[in-house]
Image (cartoon, rainbow, N blue to C red; front, side):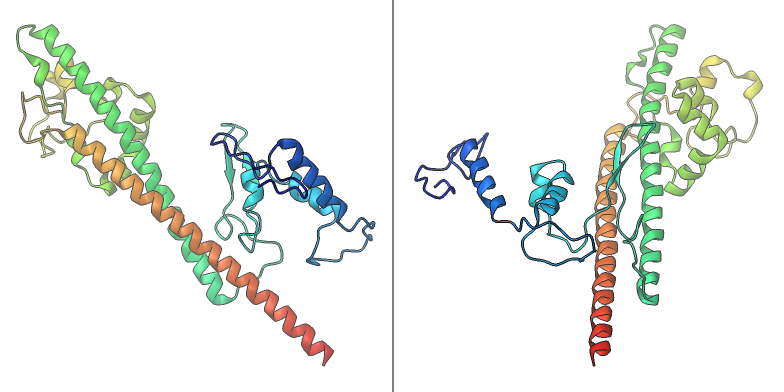
Amino acid sequence: MCRLDGCRKPARYNRKNLSKYCSDEHGRELMRLKTRLLNLKKEQDEDLGSRGGILTPGELKAVVMGVSSASEFRILGERILSPPPEEENTETGEKSTKKLGLDADPDGLTYSPTEASKIQGLRAHRDGLIHRQQMLKARDTFLGLVRQRSKAIVEKLKQTDPKGGWKDICGFDSRLAWSDEEFDEWRLSEIGSKALKAGTPEALASSYPEATDADGDTAMDDTKSDEDELASLSRGVCTKKRCERHKQWVKVQQQELIFEEEVLGQDLVTCEKEALNVVEQAMLRMWAEKDNDQVDDVK
């Protein structure tokens, strides 16, 4: 039923445009009636703080203008503290919201020693998660470059030996077997970051450690001076046909990355929630302390 008093028409029921009213006009009319019930007295210049009760027209306007959508308006009041405003990156144009407790603190908030310790621990934990997120992103980029390099090797082999049947070579790069720590060290090194930034099979090949072979074992002699272009391009890559050792390595690597990214995303959300809880508890403690001080002053 339409929520406007006196209207007995059913509310609009449309999956694409649900409404509590029979028409948009009745919705606007109800809002006009509600605003007439507000306290229309002019606000005094002094700061009255949070008074509760009915909002004045000025306060209502500030609330409405402070949100960007109806969905944001509906969730107002669900939390003790409102999140910081969004900030736009001038370089990328992307918007990001600072997280309370991790990136920003409410004005006037003072943490107790225990709360400060928790916040510092959560910030350090979040920094570690973000670092791992960047590492996983680099791994994903690296995996794409390895696949490109494998295709480039196949094309080179076809040119060298057109009848060699090179379509089914393995293409596994031994660096895919590195631990997270080893890969992170490589991607942060000058040669690793340069290869990832260049994004070419040649750059990836040139970044391969010269002292190891395709299986990651230490090479006993240095044959770099005798390497031709093909050997240089395929250094560290398994070129076996129908290799059983690295079977379906692309699928395995992709699934591992997806799983790690999902777990990481959940850990970040949990960390942000824990920090917000600490901030809210600190605010409640401060408000309680102020109330107690006021009671003591009255006595």
